[in-house]
Length: 260
Image 1 (cartoon, rainbow, N blue to C red):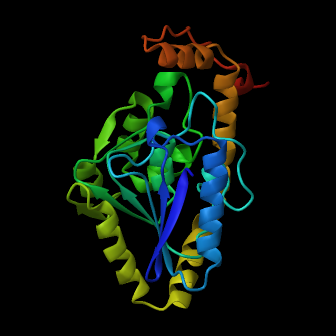
Image 2 (cartoon, one colour):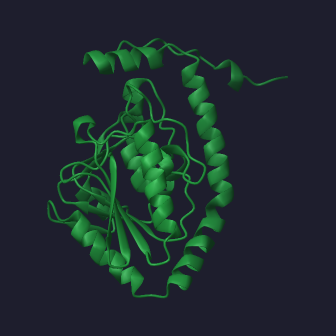
């Protein structure tokens, strides 16, 4: 099994467990993750959910060899990133959260990270664009210029800096991110679950139109890069562990040309 669930009091802890692939998401993991989160959302005894990886790594994003499979009906990509949160979803991050792993954390309501954790969006280094939420949420979760830097360079963001700029809610000692996330979840659970749910839905309603436009823009960005040669080059370079040789981009993409 690549996804496990343990209920701790009023909190469900959902773990991505595919350590041989750095917890990268393939099709079975997407399905299992979506089903685990569906069960937690539908269980009246569960008031909050902590999403985490293994003891030393959160998630390396999409499995680039086999792909993440199809989006699920309730959760979307990875079974997570389009999910409506009727219960608070907390990310507990140990080690790396890269690409889609970072985007999964952005899709959560609260983030707890180990002091040795780090985040990154390396898609441009593979000839890709971040298509699982970063183009929608990064400029909301982070200061704009920092978000743009991460998206354009693939640079790593330390847990300390992520905390300093407000993305990470709590820092934990190494190995204690889940423990700290559970403590934060219990703070949330001290309030009325009906009021918490109403609050989450109200927050979602306020960003819904911006999110819709952001996903449409993401789809256009992905279509642009898919038409060129750099995706194949980037993935081959990644697989062979060699530097990529990029092509010169057109001066103006045909679909961006002004008419008249």
